[in-house]
Length: 87
Image (cartoon, rainbow, N blue to C red):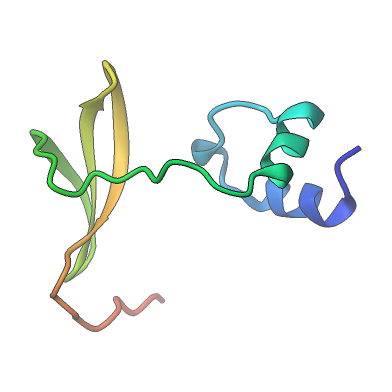
């Protein structure tokens, strides 16, 4: 059974980020991971469309990844700008 704190965290994740429900077996498997292959888009080139500019160093892009339309949040390395003020 998934503990209450984890259920709370999973419940707070915006719906657009939840791609699939997590089963108890998958949750237990995640807890038992000690090491895993690192995933990175470093040094890979994609044609993408900027769909949102968050601030001067962060954008959201849409691209085709593994044959599926996918959105990524990109932080530009070496550029540091003030955060966007909300409200």
